[in-house]
Amino acid sequence: MFKLQRNGVRWLSRSARVLNEASKPKKELPRLSMEEYRTLREEYYNAKNKIRRQTATNYSVSLFLVFMTLSFASVPLYRVVCQKTGWGGTPMTDSSKFTPDKLVPVDTDKKIRVSFTAETSRKLPWKFVPQQREVYLVPGETALAFYKAKNVSSKDITGMATYSVTPDHIAPYFNKIQCFCFEEQRLNAGEEVDMPLFFFIDPEFSQDPSMRNVEDIVLHYTFFKATHDESHEQIMAEAQKKKEAEKSANN
Image (tube, rainbow, N blue to C red; front, side):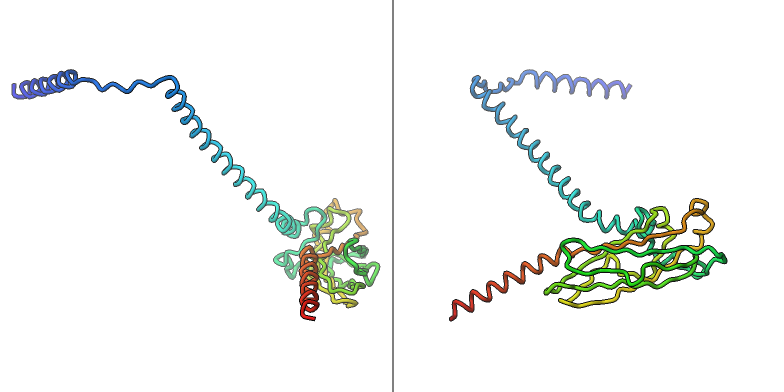
């Protein structure tokens, strides 16, 4: 009984609240002229389009920065992948794989001939040649070879070498313990240096059926002029011109 009375009180209070709100005069929105309506609509769409343009610009700038980062990182990343896996005809230089069991010569009479070739880019005034045409070795046997580089110009120049082996599929088995590749080499004007190369062929080469007919390997080096070296020369030339201009002005 008490519960019914409480529910009835609640119902009466709700009804009174509804009637009270219904009796209040409704607020009417101000009426707009057609020109005011068009103005408000244009302001709304302009603000909305401005936000869209800003969002599109932010996305474009973000994508540009991402692709710029990838473009700068792609070369060293590609280099690391090739050196780790031997992909693209790049010999392996991962020192973690140079375990003692890899440096045991295979007992075989069949020796592999490794030939050496070299070239330089047109922008690099160096003479770069191998000091030996070829060496013979068996898988697991280490070999030492040398290249000779000479700066034949009248300026100090920095160069960098890249390398590859032929045939390409031999690359995972061609390991270099010591190499001058992918490292900047700066030679003074007229300077001549010997560049050592210490390498071996993985013993697993002899167990791979696809290597059965491989008897000749060509190791090729190409020297390029370092890109920042050109900027350095330009800065030094401008500094020299400025120094000469100041000297002339003082005289």
